[in-house]
Structure formats: C-alpha cells, structure tokens
Image (cartoon, rainbow, N blue to C red):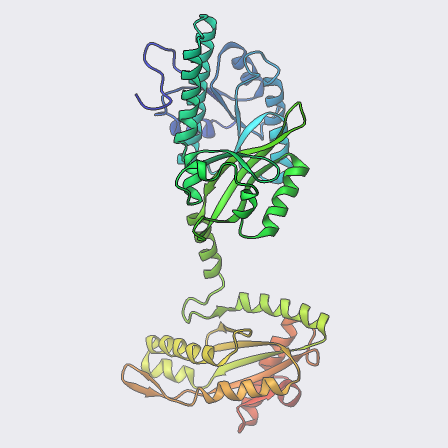
Length: 452
C-alpha cells in the first residue's frame, strides 16, 4: 500500500481546498486526484468554516486573497473550532509573497506557504507528508481510546514517526543555540557528506562550520532572534570534504518552559535551481553573438564606476570603438562572414583589456571599453593605441583575408560628463570627429568632439 494511503476499511482522509476561484479549485483538485484522499471544495471563508465544523480534515489548502473573509481571517476562525484547531493549514498565494505577509501567515497558524504557479511535485510531496502524519495521528488516537496503549504500542508509534523522520528526502535537524546538533536525520547527514547522523550529533559549533560565509550565519541568527523563525533562507553550505553547495533552510526557535532553547527545521539542496538562476542572470548580461558583455551590463558597470570615482576622486574613461568598412564586408561576403568577423574582433579586443576593465558590444559594429580608477588620461590613450594595433592583422574568414580597421573616440569623467549617458554620447561624438579629421584613428572629446 503506498505511503499515506488509508486501507479500504478505513475512511478516506479529507483535504479541504478553499478558494473563491473555481478555476483554482478545479486545478488543485486535478493535481491531487491521485493522492489517495477525498477533496472537499469551499468557495470562501464562511463555507470553509461550516465544512470544518462538520468534517475532520487532514489538511487545509487556503487561498489568501478572497472577498468577504480573507485567508488570514479564515485561518484564525478555523483555529477556534474544535475540529479545526489542530488541522495544518498551507497558504497558497500569487501575490502575498513579502516577508510581512509570510510572518502574518505563520502567526495565524499556517505551517507552510506555496506560491502560484504551484509546482505539482512540491504540492503532492507536501500533501503526502501531512496525510501520513494525520494517519498516524488517527491511529494513535484510536489506540489511546481503546486503552491498549501499552509500552509496546508506544514504541511502535514512535517507530512510525521515526520512520517518516528517517525516510524524508529533506534534511531535518535540531541544534542548540551554540550550534551543537542534537538530532539530524540520514538525509541531513548525506547532504553534508557524513556517513551517518552520529557523525554530526554532539560536535560543538558544527552548525556554524557548515556555512561557507560567516556573514550568512550572522544574518541567519539575526532573523531567527528577531522573528522566531527563518523561511527559505538560502546560503552556500560546506560538505565534510570541503565541497560547497547551495542550501535552502526553513527553521524556528523553540523555547521550553525551563528557558532552554532549540532550533529545529528542514534543509534541502537547491544547487541545481540556484545554478540555473545564476546562469540565466549571466546570460542576461552577455551579447549572444560575440560572447562579450552587452550594453545593459556596460551601462550598469559604468554607473557603479562613476559612484566609486566620485568618492575616490579618480578618473573614468569611456572608449567608443566603431569598425571601419564593416558594411563592405557584409555586402561582399555576406552576413555570416560579418557575424564571424564581429566574433573575431571581440576576441582580439578582449585579450587586450585588463581584467578590471569592461569590454562590451554596444550594438551593430560598435564596441565600448570602460576603464576605471585611472591616474591620468594618458592611460586611456595607451589602451586605445593597443586596441587599434591588434586590429591591423588581417582576419581569415572562409579562406579570405579581410582587413578591417577601427576608429576610437574617448571621453573622460569628470571633464567630459558627470553621468553615463553623457560620457557615452561624447565618446561617440569624439569617434565621429576622428573619422572627419582623418589620419590618427583615435581622439578625445576635447580634441575631436564636435556636433555631428
């Protein structure tokens, strides 16, 4: 029999879904259709309260934004009902995802949050856990009622809960405020590279050692002390062998009557998702044709460089590079050759700029170079000469030797402009001034910058 399902002789466990949208109700009903539970629907808070007074539910999935009585109000009223007092509530919302609303949800009795669009695997996994726990609760209550709760049955009940703890795919833990683990499950041990949980339990200060950045631990403890819980806290974790991975943790601070404290919670490996996010963020800054940075990243770096330059009283230079005769290459050899030429130009330029500087394709056959923390303007002139020199060697494309030069216009902060738009515009103006003058292939805005 699959975990979480009740045998045919026992009543089907019930899950209440509360949402004012029939579409949402139908969608959630469809997601949970094969989870071995009876789905009961309510179109609002008042109907949910009526149903909760008449039925015993294993779990309630509750929308927050509803007319008349919202999710928070409904949750508070549910907790006042004899049959609703101990029913776990998972809030589902598309808009109330800020820290304040998450806090309000936990204060009104929620055990978890799901955000729309709901991930089917996440939803069904969480529902199965609560169905399992509810089934164990029902079985335990029946054993107590029938007065057959012997020492053996107590051990069996404990083993049932322990089985859930041991088999969970997420890391589950308890530790003292000084960072000593008192309880970890096998999944937690595996995540951090330990052969078994015993290797983690009782080691003083181990919790702090598992975080790569000490600032993360300080920030984590600050939130925990301030709010009493931490939700989906992401940090870089360190395995026993030194490897790092991305973690997401949700935990709470438990204070007992005698004043002692424990932190308990769950932790999961989110490395794959985090790497995908970082890769997408990186791709958003890269020019897809040439592989160098794009204009959006260039403007962002320029704005940051200007903030630093204003604080340190240093010089920033913007070099605007325009390829000569690029249109002729496109017309003669085709756009495929033109694209290959841009890739090769970008590769040569990238080898000539410092790691601290920024090369970007601004559009078409135009590139920009950002030089930061210059002592004087001569440094930018030297870089311009170096970039032009690397362009003199012919490019071999489809067996053809193609010569393409470039023209460079230069502007400086603070002499030529105080903001990024002005500096790029004046470097562009300087570039066109150089083209008009002929001869030297680079020049500054002060020398060559005239209205086009």
